[in-house]
Image 1 (spheres, rainbow, N blue to C red):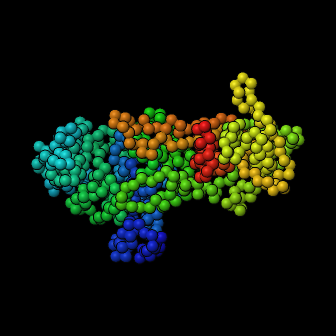
Image 2: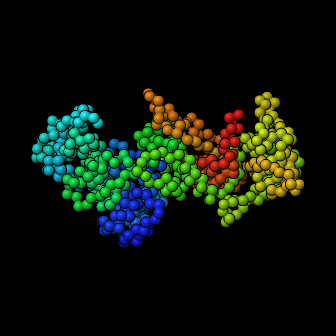
Image 3: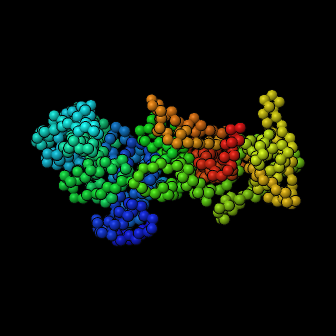
Amino acid sequence: MSTQSETGGDAVPSVHRNFIQAVIDADVAAGRDGGRVVTRFPPEPNGYLHIGHAKAICLNFTIAEEFGGRCNLRFDDTNPVREDAEYVESMKEDIRWLGFDWGAGEHYASDYFEQLFDFALELIEKGLAYVDDLDAAEMRAYRGTVTEPGRGSPHRERTPAENIALFQSMRAGEFPDGSRTLRAKIDMASPNMNLRDPVLYRILRVHHLRTGDAWCIYPMYDWAHGQSDAIEGVTHSLCSLEFENHRLLYDWFLDNLSTTYRPRQYEFARLNLTYTLTSKRKLIRLVEEDLVEGWDDPRMPTLSGLRRRGYTPAALREFCAGIGVAKFNSTVDMVKLENSLRDDLNRHAQRRLAVLRPLRVVIANYPEGETEQIEAVNNPEDEDAGTRKLPFSRTLYIDRNDFREEAPRKFFRLAPGREVRLRYAYCITCDEVVKDPESGEITELRCSYDPQTARGQTPDGRKVKGIIHWVSAAHAFDAEVRLYDHLFATPDPSGVEEGEDFTSNLNPDSLERLQHCKLEPSLADAEIGEHFQFERQGYFCVDTTDSAQGRPVFNRSVSLRDAWARIEKKGTQR
């Protein structure tokens, strides 16, 4: 990365610079804006932030930090119909959780409503804006198509004096909602549809979360956006690619207004992720139609959902850094996001034993009533993590998936007459299978152990390929464990057949709740939000909503990245 002093100066380029860094390198070297770098993250407070926003957040804040500048957090609160203080607070919480701080740079588009109104009057006085009486349907008809030019509104030639009077009356609340708009007067034949006299203001009597009922006209996003950047002195306005065609409009506004500063806009590719939708409109539908359990449902791509599922800020920042910044849209495989989490948790998460689908095992030749303490490693990736003691006794639980009565050739776990090693403990052999006489379901395995095989030893040199996890039945802690999968069943959930809705691609198996899982006793004291690797199962965290002290609920954050998952899937299909 580049480095730069707090007071500005030339950044020192490194070999791997994205195009935005290269632009700012050149600007700083040329002394533009006095070497200042000011970015901004401008969310609309009409929903929760999602994984796509994480990319924009990381880009804007890290760019500002790298060049010794600042990043403003500005809420574009120009549409009070869908905005809520809950969304504002959730966004601030998410950004802080990611590890970023905007300091004194918290702003709102509503801070500038009076200034934006004055800018609009300036355009009217110059003959560059007019009040229009067309309704929405008529406006669409006059606008034309991508192949046909639009037509000027019958009200397009009103005089500046008439338009000023009408616009002032709009503000004073003298007209019904939707009856009039203020439009820029640009070019109804422009090939860029955004320049065909876009609407700047509409009449809307809705209570605003910050200005209350002071206004009954509200600026459109495109009108407020660029001017807010200019007011704040933003040097580099970083937008996703869908705003590329809007840049000419923003420039037109700045060309024709007496603003003292001119931001420069640069567009980058937004984040598209397999098995994921980030359309706020669709996410709102999922929540409002109870297709998920809220904005923080661990299956949602929202930052609050990812946080509850067990994703870490470090993993998300590493993921955003790894996918890079490009000028062309592409789709990132969900595996990359999952691998970022695995890499982070592999270094930091302590290991624990957990049996999710318990099957009772009795070691017939182990002394009744005896318990011994087995030493287990907390994290082989962290030398300072130390070890812990696991109680071992005559009756254990193993996972049902670790036993097959009729085992295939490459099934290296427990089967009648086969020997496996219990993780950290002894080797056992299955001698007898006990079944329910009515259902035929396996209820218990009767096994024998070799006392000479403690702590990984095999004195006679025999090879025991299978290693399985276990917990002592007398000491096990009962808990609920939730296994989460992709919310959507297909990599491209927006690609539905004609006439179908995107909800038809929801994955019916995205959540499996397992009750009465058997966990090693230390997990009873797990703290809310704490992460663990359940050995051979995956990475899990203590749910932040449904857990209580001494009663943790565990969410699977991500499965393990090894052959076990593939073997398990094949075994389940059998």
